[in-house]
Length: 482
Image (cartoon, rainbow, N blue to C red; front, side, top):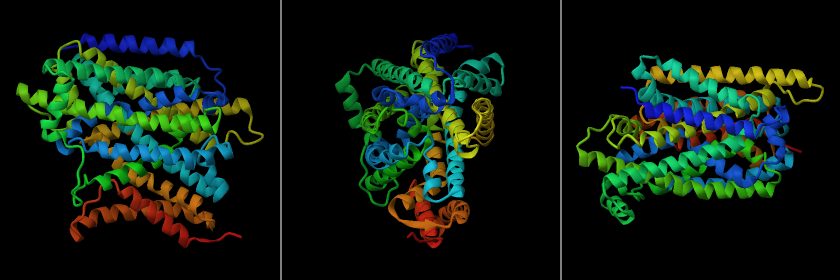
């Protein structure tokens, strides 16, 4: 049956977004697209980055995760906060001192052109797969709720979403995204709070009743002190710390927003505020998960195989009432677009600046603008290709998949930046691409052998192992710098 609430929500949201982008219209030149003229208000950037980092995955995956791991994900969120502080006072001063448009330009200055290309290529791989996985979740939900009942194929849903993102990011780039992300973050948080209110009302729970329900539930466990568990506090905290450093501080997508602030001090205030806000937002999602599973148990509702499917199933089946469809659709669409649009823009920036070098002296401005438009279209097609692969392969919990992929793709970036920042040795530039490829392959081999040989199962610490292997290998291919 076609749910007309979904169509109404989508139409209203898209109309609001189009009007908003026209209101905050950009000049459309490369300076606005790449840097927003370095005049973005830091408070606006901080608020908008919440939606960009959370995405539609968090709205459906984090609540679905509590069945298997309780609320222990909050331990990793505490590590996130520590990671944002490291970024604010270690990496941002470097980026601002060098006045970078792409943060991977640092690798060119520190090591050489091949290292620069290696860092940019690993970012492209990391961001493309991660952002496509996040967008895939949203496309699946919207398709099942609105498009499939009409007998239309899944690829049509993907095409419509990608075309919409392409059209409103094509001209303004990061200048428009800083502002639209703030609007989309507000929509996401309002929708999430509304869903929690609806579920608690269905269960006749007050605020104290919600707290009591969580305390009595086995899923309400927030801290794990068993050192042998993959959910052990110290293990999760350290993983969260380094995941944040690589997926934010070494990520062109997130850093590009920070580099639009007028000064280093404003960028640091933005990063610290953003880090503090991540804790209550993720706590809201975890509370939502406990309430949803408790509600399903009380109503005798059969649980889906994958945790990602719980919230969409309850909304789509009408178990939470028809009115909740509207805020849910608004929330997941806002989260998906705020994550995907900034990813698409940062990928375009990295390809243009790092690989095609459109900002080098003597490069024709009109040619650079045309090239940027073509690259942006190619990035949208690459998103469609990755989503098709995810759809054919299927998935469990997408957020878990994203973090595991990050261990392989961001690990070499972690090793490269750590070597550059904490040593003064000169690396053999031509060896860097081989090191960056071999290290993830060794990690994959160790991940396969560890359970068989040592009865140890790697979690997200694969990222640290990958970074360490890259660092050691760089030491082997380096010499003292005079």
